[in-house]
Image 1 (cartoon, rainbow, N blue to C red):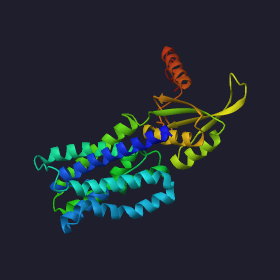
Image 2: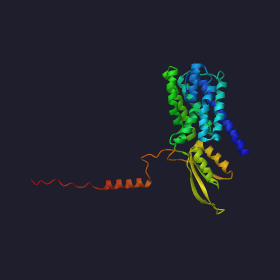
Image 3: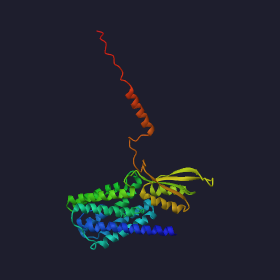
Image 4: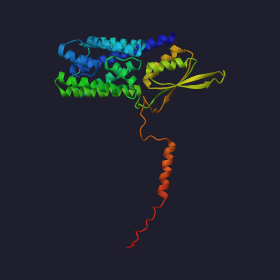
Length: 320
């Protein structure tokens, strides 16, 4: 019960902080300077410029069909946090409009600092297993089908179309270029916080429980990650059992821990750092990555070839 209350408190704290930081960036930096920071917020910024519609309210309305897609794709449990994040961010954007101090100075500073604030706000939301909807949610849904691409890169691709449209709406290519800087900084911050500085790093779970099969099925279907079951035997009890091995990225740790708690509160869990993970969903295996044995054989072969004298070629005989 205490653990559940702590989780709820952490969810509320992170989602509130993330929504507030994100809304501050939109109302104080991007929207007043006619910079569409991609996603649904970028679309709403353009609609606000053209028709004066409230950014927060329109953002909430556009997110409704995306939420329905998410419920069908990944279930209502994970989407509940996203619905809360969408409501909070939309509400804060409209509440801070006209209240938040506006900066209209150097547009480069606007693009950079808005990207930092947006990236921080979105990361606070993502780390609790939620999104702010829009391209954030679309990127997470697409990542389930294309795990070799990071969420930040998927968001960058989806936002390209919106940036191109903003150049037409605002009648300025420069504004679109500032939006590119904003989105690049934002996605870099997201990748750095959620994945670390290297997409090939993550966390490694060893879970010992009679219910590892149920846990594994949920990890496979809810996170689109694979697991490995290892035969094990208790040193004290001498009872045979299974251990689940699972490698995930940092932002997925919370979701795996939630699954474990829901299935077996008494599970024995070891979580360690994985300094390098190669394969599908992480860093791709490069063509020049070779096993140590192969590298040694190639090295020995090169030394032997270098130690041999070139064959002596006899001059052609003249038989004429």
